[in-house]
Amino acid sequence: MAQCLLITGMHRSGTSAVAGALDALGVDFGDRLMPPREGENSRGYFEDLEIHKAHDRLLSDAGHSWDDPRALDESHLPERSLGDFREEIRRILRDRFSTKTLWAIKDPRICLLGATWLEVLDDLGIETRWVIVHRHPNEVAASLAHRNGFSAEKSAALWLNHNLAIESSTRGVPRAFITYDELLDSPGDNLTRLAHELDLSWPLAPDQADAHVRDFLAPALRNHTAYPEEKVRAGRFSPWPERLHLLLLTASRARSTPLSDPVDNLVRGMPPFEDLVDPFPLEHNAQRANLLEGELASLRDQLVSLSDQLVSLSDMTEDRLNAAESVLGTDAQEKRDTAAAITGLQEQLDEQSKWLRIQEDEIETHKGAIKALQEQLGERTRWLQIQSEAIDRLLGELEQLKKASEC
Image (cartoon, rainbow, N blue to C red; front, side, top):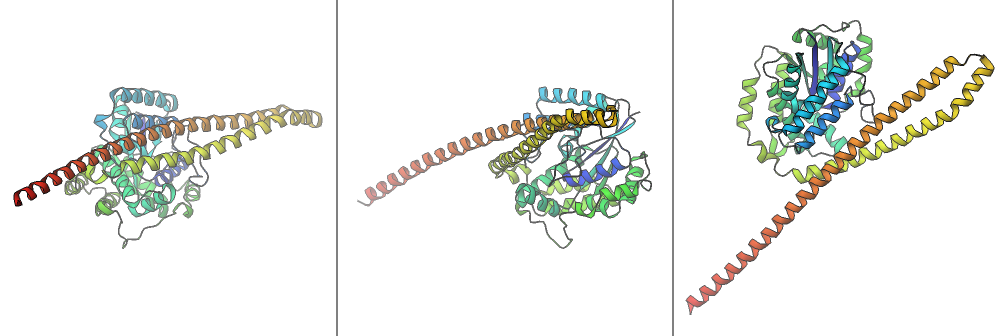
């Protein structure tokens, strides 16, 4: 039976590190992956571009996104959008992995859609294994503050949201927990541990690919480090991220330690999550729109650069081929190399164009959400003004009654 490894976690760098290490061991992630991005993840994301797009579309249809601090109830996803998502995922999996016995899907958004993925893979008769990557909430907050400008409170909400959701949806299925630090500090031992806990055999043993794995997991990947004595500055969310982190850390180091009861007890001790995140919606949508505008500008620049390279390469092609024919008398290989280069650039151009369209659609969605929230804010302000005027009138009447009674 085919086996699918689902790799997910709140922090993208952590999940990318695990995926890159497994790629070095020969685990197949498909051939339609999101392109690397300099300055953010130059070693690659290992995320299928079409699956990423399908995730964002489903979340958007539900009025949600990966960086929305509100909890997502999968049972309330729009039925039509959910049906379209399931059908698209089935098609992608058939196209990418129909002949594979072990393959992997990696995406942080799977944290929010774990139950949906389990249903799809179960319907297809595919055995599922989960690798859940977690990182100290302080480090995640520092990373999101640097990259996205998120407050510590919003980062704490997202960290809790993702980790609570994936822990709950994967209960009773084969899963293994791993921390980002554990992987970077001792990749071989931890990759061996994952295989043992998930009852899997990697295509290459960790010791056979040790040099490749360690090269990929360079120390430079660790941009932010938290220390045990530090406290998570999570505002109204304290101390829940720190407590959940300790539970997950215990699970990654002791497989037999039960996790569901301690996590349920932690959740019961928390205030209602919707009360904690109530102040965030307007801030979230404004941040989201600004972030996507920046990403869109960057992608447009990349698109222009790729277009210029393609034009330049095309212009040189005829001259290079003629020179190759006259000097060497054999131009076949030169033609193939040049054609392959043009094809590769064209594919990059196509991928960047797709990504650009995704970002444009998401920007419009969040602009609409911001407008709606601003209108709600205006309505609340007008209502408060009306109430204030009514109170003023009542106070005036009360004052008149007092004067009349004194007379």
